Image 1 (spheres, helix red, strand yellow):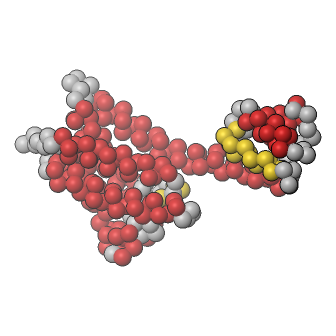
Image 2 (tube, one colour):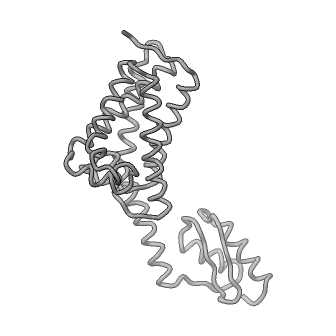
Image 3 (cartoon, helix red, strand yellow):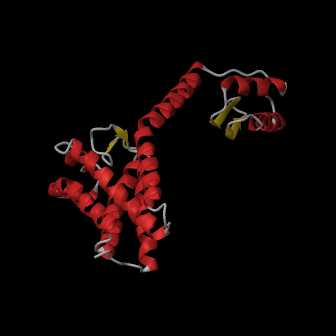
Amino acid sequence: MHCSACVSKIEQALSAVDGVLMVTVDLSSKSATITGGAQPDALIKAVQDAGYESRITEGQMEIARKQKTDSISQIHQLFPLFLIFFYITVFSLILNRSNFQLDDFMYDFMGLFYIVFSFFKFLDYKNFPASFSMYDPIAKRLPLYGWIYPIIETLLGLSFLLRYQLLISLVATIIFLGITTIGVTRSLMDKSELQCACLGTALKLPMTKATFIENLIMILMSAWMLLRGDFYTIF
């Protein structure tokens, strides 16, 4: 690699490899930085086919292996969370199978969400507050809040399932989960390696974007229902 034309040619060759998201070729160091999940052998072959010699350093190979291992490990750790969301969705659909109404489906989904998630928090209740206080802004300043949070979730779950005091429950969902989401966002931005307390401490879940997404789903559903303004009770 001797000139800008070589750089352009190598960038084009690497960009055509499956799994490559971005390529940066540096002429001075005669190196290329690739972002994505492409296989190392495929990258080497692409450069060689373009008429240049190439190799991946041991350090780069180690980084690639570690990233792949971390990605697989994270997916494995988050599997219980995905499975729970799947079951909550399926049971919400079953509850509304005879006469499907979007409002009822969303209320049942939110109700089951709270009940299931509070259940896991109670499994290791004594350790939950400490884990929760690592990222929740209120729990950091008020330890008691960590102890009563699972109870709040249970009450909100029952409220949605029974269609009782829906306006209060929707507003409370936005407030409580909104505050927690702020803490989650800060942790993700700081790249803090914390355990997510969303399913308590019995299941060792890492703090990831999935935690942010699950809270955001509940907040958006609550905001949608508030905008619709259809609050009713079965009593």
